[in-house]
Length: 102
Image (tube, rainbow, N blue to C red; front, side):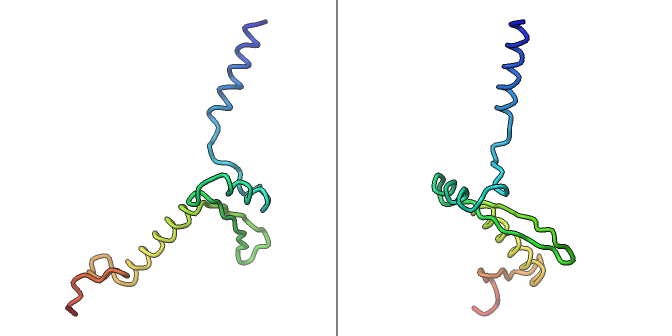
């Protein structure tokens, strides 16, 4: 009987250790998010926003850290630069090297 209890306790402890580190931010209220953001550094602040897709009344809530938002912004701006100026062109938005206007 003791072995069963020890095995059960060990499996509960092991299961709690292998959980994800990410909290369920999309389920938090605004006050809970503000309280969380006060406990972490600025790059780890969490921002949530609702998205309503066209033709649907179902809202989806996305929550991202400031670093994740900045990384997505950088990826999107790079993709737009490639579309606008081509991958092989020397011009990059914000950094114009060898443009011929020297």
